[in-house]
Length: 258
Length: 315
Image (cartoon, rainbow over all chains, first blue to last red; front, side, top):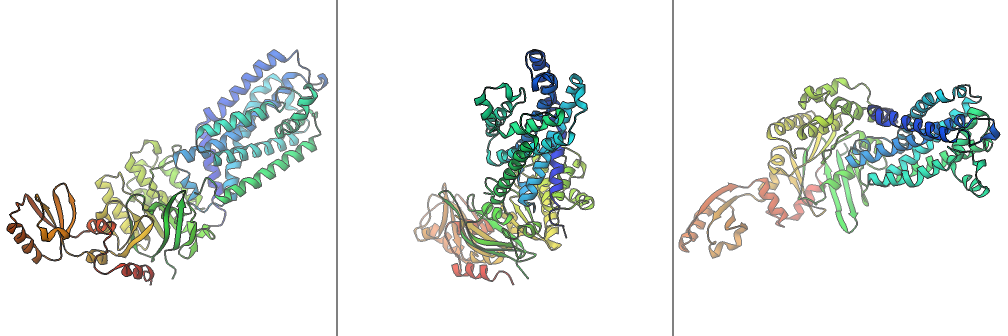
C-alpha cells in the first residue's frame, strides 16, 4: 500500500528538473540581469548616494538588495510559469489525477519556487561579491537566511496564486508587471527609505517587500531601517496568511477542478 | 463486493448547458464496459467526475466503494485515466514521464513495471526520447502508459485510439484486452463503434446527458435484430415508406425483421415498376443500433429494460 502523502517529493523533483533543464533561461539570465543593474547603478550612484549615514558604500548596500530582488522575482516566476505552462499545455491533468492533496501541491510548488529563488540569489551573490568582497563576512547570516527563505516562500506562494487564477500567459505577465515589479522596485532595493520624503516613507511601510529586503540587508550589515524582529514578524505573518489562503483555494478546486 | 464504478444521480451544469442530468451507472469489477454517445453527450464530463477533475452538482460517484470526493486518495489510486486530449510535458523523456507519474502515486522504484509497459506499448526504443520528438500515435501510447503506472484496477480510456493508425490500434487493443483478462475493469469511450462491438461486454449510450440505453452488447443487438436493406432507387413502394429508417441522397435504409420479408419488398418494387439502381443487405451492427437509439427508437422491449439493466448490473 502506498503511504499517504508520498507523492509530493516527486512533484518537487519535477519542479526542480523543469527549471534545471532550461537553466540558461531560469538561472543564468537573471544573474546576468542583476550584474548589469549593479554595474550601471553603482557606477552612476556610488559617489552621489549616502546610505546608513555613510557607514556602508552604495555598491555594498546595493548587492543584498539585488540578491533579494532576484530571489523574490525568480521564486514568483517559477511557480507561476510552471503552473500556467501546465494549464496551457493541458498536462496539469497529470498532477490532478493522482492522489495529491492540496497541502502536497502547495508544499511541492512553493519549495520548488524557493529553491529556484535561492539558487539564483546565490548566483547573483557570487558574481556581485567581486565588487564588494567585504560582504562575505556578514554579521548575521542566519537573519539573512531567514528572510531569504520567508521571502522566497511568499513569492512562490504568490506565483502559485497567479498560476491558479490565470488562464493565459499574459495574465501572469500582468500580475508580474503591475504587482510584483512595482512592489519590488519600491521596496528599497536601490535606496534606503530614509532618503525618501516622509510621505513615501510611510507608504513604503505598507509594502511587505520592504520588510523582506530590509531584514535581509540587516544580515549583511547589522543595520536596518526598521528593527529586524519587526520585519520578521510582518514577513512571517504574511507568509502564514498567504499560505493558509492558498491551501484554501487549492482545496476549493477553483480554476483547477471545474 | 463493491462495484468498480458506481455513479448515482450524477448531474452537472456548465452555465446554461445541462451536461449531465442525473446519471445512474454501475460497472462491475472485471467488466469491459463501453460508454458511447455523440459529441456533447456528456461522456467526458462523466469521466472527469469519476477522476475528480470535475465536481458534480449533485449525486455521488464511487470507485470500488471509495467516494471520489470524500475519499479521493483511495478513489484516485484505484483509477487510471487515459485523457482524450493529446497532452504531454515537453520537458521530459518518455521514461522520465512514466517515472514521474509513478512518483505522484508514491511509487519510487517502478522500473520493472515501466519496462513492461514500454514493451507492451512498443515504446522501448523511444524510452529516452523527449516527448516532443514523438509522433501523435506514440504520445497517445505514452498517455496509456501514464494511466497504468500505478497498476489501477479500474482503467478509463477516453477515446484512446483517436488518431492512432490501424496497426497500432490493434496492438493497443491486444494490450488492453490482456489487462481486462488479468482482472482490470475497463471503461471505454470511442467513436469507432466496431471497436466497442468487438471489445465491450456491456454498453451504455448517452444522449444529451442521459443514459438512453444500458445493456449487454448482445441484448442491444437483438433489440434491433434483423436486417437492413440499402436500396438505391427513385422512390420506395408506398406500403414500405413507414419502414424506411433513414434516407441519404436517394439511398434508402429499410428495416426487415427476417430474410423472408425481402421477397415482399422485391414484389412491391416490381408491382410499382420501380427500378433498382443498387441493393445491398446488411445484418444489424452496433452502429445501426447506435443510430437508431440516438434517433429515439427503443427497439424490441422498452425503456424499462434499460432501467432494469441499470439497477441489476452488478451482482
